[in-house]
Length: 108
Length: 114
Figure 1 (spheres, each protein chain N blue to C red):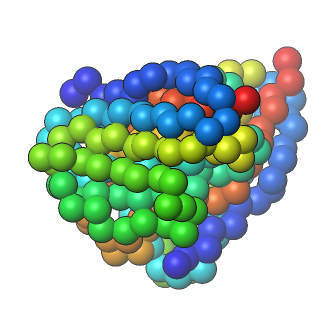
Figure 2 (cartoon, rainbow over the protein chains, first blue to last red):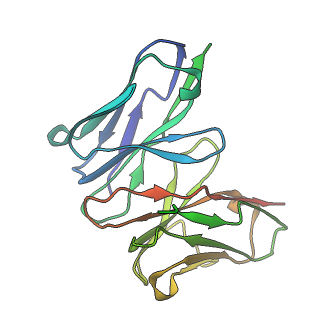
């Protein structure tokens, strides 16, 4: 099955700072998602982005499918952005594989 | 769209007991997934269904684990003779899948085995 790497593993930011999270896949994927897991454990969909660029408020994501990576951009970070960010993908109908996550702490 | 529903939210059980969790997917979704997440780790795939057919099982799913999805609607995950290592968050997701379909997760069932 595919392998998923995420970087950085941990990130500490001051409120208002910008950040970029990266996700690399060992093989091509046709489904790719970014999730935010809040302190209560709930996985919240951020983006479904198998290719291209999407934006939602202060967050945006870009996937370069041919190079097997995706980036999540967080601008003007807020303390409520804290939590763990996961990317996950599947390879043409197989199960979704998750990366190990990036743990983000935004300090006031 | 009422979202994916999981029951119970929390379960505390003694080692050796059997437990059963339920997941109700989004109604028009034909794919249903079970994942397990331990502290500090990403969700790990356990199994998934396409309608009522169980298409894939992870090696994580020992003989003590069984999942069903009768009639292709809700699903149950049963763990027999629980062990302390089974303590984890059990997450259910559904999708309209298999292709070009995002996963939608429930809030999970947190299992503690004492």
